[in-house]
Length: 134
Image (cartoon, rainbow, N blue to C red; front, side, top):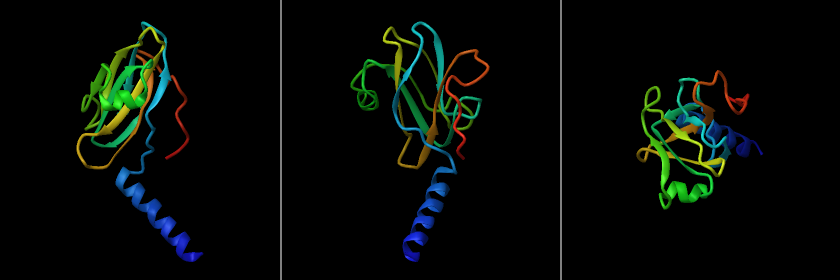
């Protein structure tokens, strides 16, 4: 029992070290208002959080996140380093489907985390409430 707890604690500490104690949001479909321009980002300029060198890709939500990640469908926006540091900050106009497919990946083989958010450009706060996590 003690070995399991110790190994679990070691795994958590290692994960925090690799990702810089940042949460990573999985690729998802995110609702938006057609025709409105949004920031889709995981930078430290008020939209999400990141560590490492992440890339974000935004596709029409009529596509799956896997198709978006694989590049088998056209993307609306893709960004590597437009945010603070090496964090992505893309802008895209919401398509007629009323949704974005958002996919992230590392620039290279290094570790990364991307707690991305989607906000209307010019808004004063998050479209989705920020999590209370680390």
